[in-house]
Length: 215
Figure 1 (tube, rainbow, N blue to C red):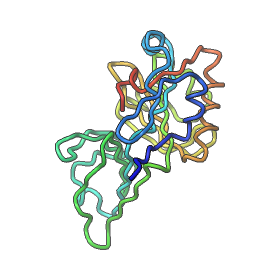
Figure 2: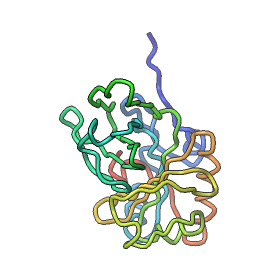
Figure 3: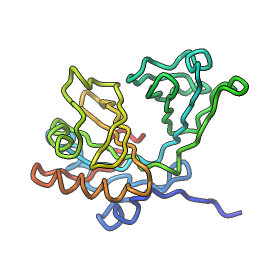
Figure 4: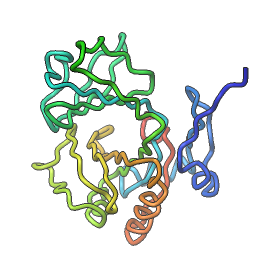
């Protein structure tokens, strides 16, 4: 049986821009463009990367904390156990939490009639805006208050980016501000192009997943 390879909604955009593609965990992922330049701009400017090669699982329950006691407070992001490998958990509302992981997410069985799991792995495009000038770019495309006291590291919010419904997750890497934007797959290209346009005046560069630590 042929192996099915998943591709991001941005695949052809990445290839056209010169991405070095790499097969990873069943995905074809943009590994890098120019590693030296990416690393430099991540530390000094702002980069844009496609991080869609992740598993996404939405958990919903009236009593979510009783079912999944490790979930953080609303608006927070935390690492939780997943069969020995930690995954990120974004608490969106009192009744919903989104799990992001490079590997499939395994959660305890939901209580009968009051818990639901929805796999959004193929339904979302995930892109990252990272670097010390991230906020300069994002302020042009979202109304979210991105000041550190309102949106510190490991926080999340549901809002809009480029007028598209989005979940915005701040998850800094190596002390560098990093924001992941999750949008419906069908608007992924539009949001990507809007971010490139908004970032052009401040010199945004494309980066591969490797530069941002892979996942």
